[in-house]
Length: 191
Image 1 (cartoon, rainbow, N blue to C red):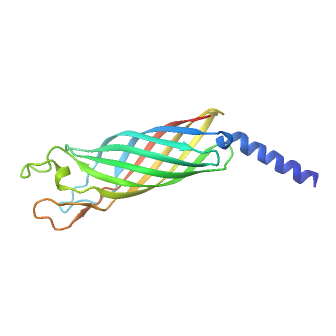
Image 2: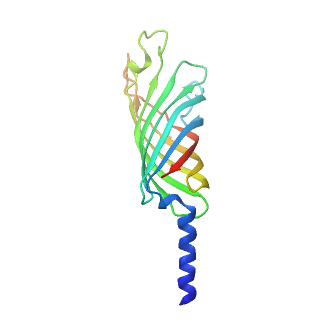
Image 3: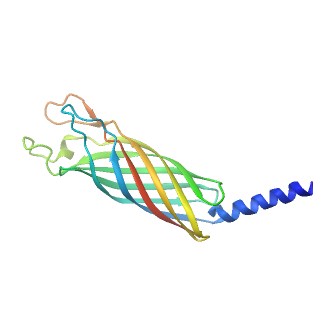
């Protein structure tokens, strides 16, 4: 019986020391560093490529390992003046794993295509011809605690969005797939 109690005590001590779940509040800030579009090639066989992302990921974790987050970033489409803007709201959970901080989460939000001019034959900006579309994502983040007060983490997001609808001239109700995968880096502070 003594061995069981000592084993449980040791395991609990290790778990609570190595994860920030003992903190009253944890704030995480990150930025996208790479992205890849998952949309299929168009009818000509051309596939859109990313030309870099900019923006931020913010997360606030409550004392019981559940947290809320906001993502806002834009990805440039290589060889064009187009950008895909993404806004997401997330709910995440930090798994109680010793030594590393492993987070899994889900998010929902919207994507939109943004550019000064869609086509030379269309005088308006492309955002005038494309509706915003719904988006969902799942993501994971793995962090290494450097001190009990903060950690550095890497994240991976897989975004699905197949509902951005073309509403311009000769609209046929077709929808675009603006899905992408995004990797990021960040830092979390525990209070």
